[in-house]
Length: 115
Image (cartoon, rainbow, N blue to C red; front, side):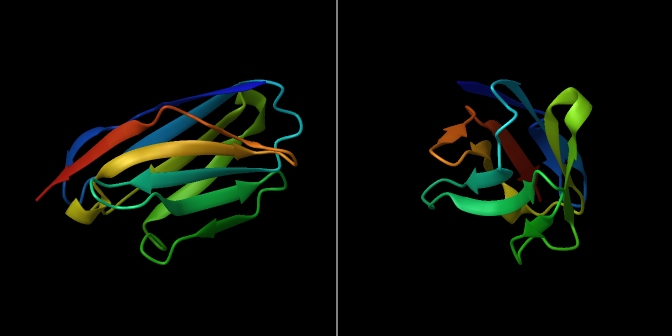
């Protein structure tokens, strides 16, 4: 069993920055990949960024060059640094931990970017 807790969301003006955190607890050793997804009203949930246990990261084209995913293994935490935020980045951001047999999701944190 794994528990994920996101934090760091909030209201920010366009061009601003936020850092989201995803703290994992429980049986985290076998997590293969940790990802950030987002879901805006009326839209499907989409992948934003992902990072493997080994530290390899990949990003959606819409956030490349603006967002950075990183991990602190000592703190069992994955971060999403979001810079140059745009109103279209407004969404609920979710953290997902992928195991071989199943995925675990957090409850999400709301990011609102005002123009």
